[in-house]
Image (cartoon, rainbow, N blue to C red; front, side, top):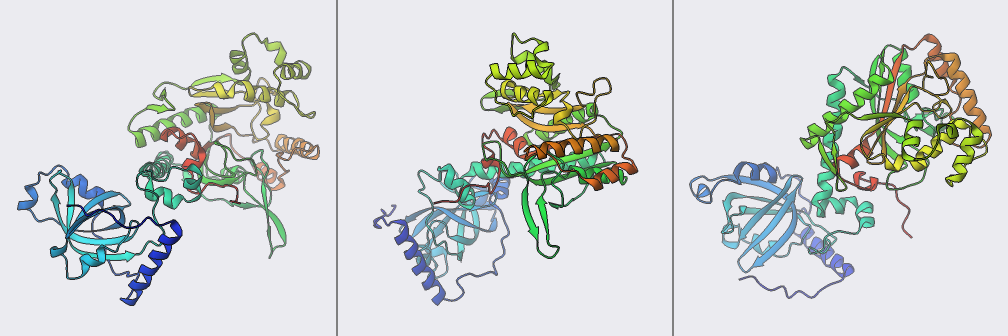
Length: 501
């Protein structure tokens, strides 16, 4: 018969004080934080190996186990009790019977709390409800939990608290653990795909003298010994292309980037990307490679190319659509005429009609992209490569051979979000220098995201970079898509958040 819980309800402060008192008592008995225990088994492995065995199997076969984990549930029943321990792989029920334990252990167990980390040695058996369990023969406190766990019936549901106290989220929410385990698998599969294609993984500086490689506002820091300002990188692109110059013709980096921008469900100031560069390839091959990578990752981690995201079905086995920026604007804005997008005057008038604000220094290419981002991008649900971006907004991309106003560049969109950006790289050192100078003019006019002039990169190009294609793919957003997660905060272990008042 289960003993009713007659313990008076305490507030969190009182429970903390009570647990501190229990820790003080443990200290009087010896080492309160022992570290000699050796775990031999994990919950998931035991379930996988023995879950299907009938109860009488354990009468004929003694299966000794030694496990450890955090107490997640506890039921006191006189001289016998149950608890569930949780380790990194899952949970295991433990049956604790007073007469089966060394003298005094059961009385100590009854003082333990939810959240305590304990070790258990015993044998496997099946309960009357057919639950695989451990019949304890020895139990030991390893770490006393000094703070109470969230309410067992409601769990940890506050998204603000879950993001701020990720450790508590991982303890309480199996779905959170699943997402981050899945994230790890996704990154492993990306590496496997790139390595199998003979790409070399490298590391480039996170602190850079110049914040180049992408259009974004950087974070600034200062190196005291060198007495110079440095920038947290917004992209590894210019360093990776230096390596292509040096003869690393297929190179990639899974990198942390930092951009001093707003926080949203899609943006975090610190985020993870993979960038790769392949010599003797064009942006057409880069699109195909990106498509193949995403299929490989989905199949490796989900076991299928049929993905459900926010109740919408995506068939990744089908070829990804390809269309230009202008064609996409015309398709998603019925009634527009192509001529409205061909001059600054007509494009500005169109933007005004669509209530899209513009800065005075925007050229035609930038205006086209503003119209595209406001009227098209959110509607790009099926996987689609948008191509032919204007040179004005693509300072590192190669101009198109037949129309220098546009570049050989693409962006990949799935579920209304940009996942990847790639292009045939600009390897003309003189033209790249002109593009940098144009960026400097924009910066002088107040564009905080314009790129600086990177003289050393121009020098590297002057030594000669082969025709090259490069791609940057956002790993955080890919994880969101493959785990059916709507906010980037839920796929980052420690997202950036405002300080609590």
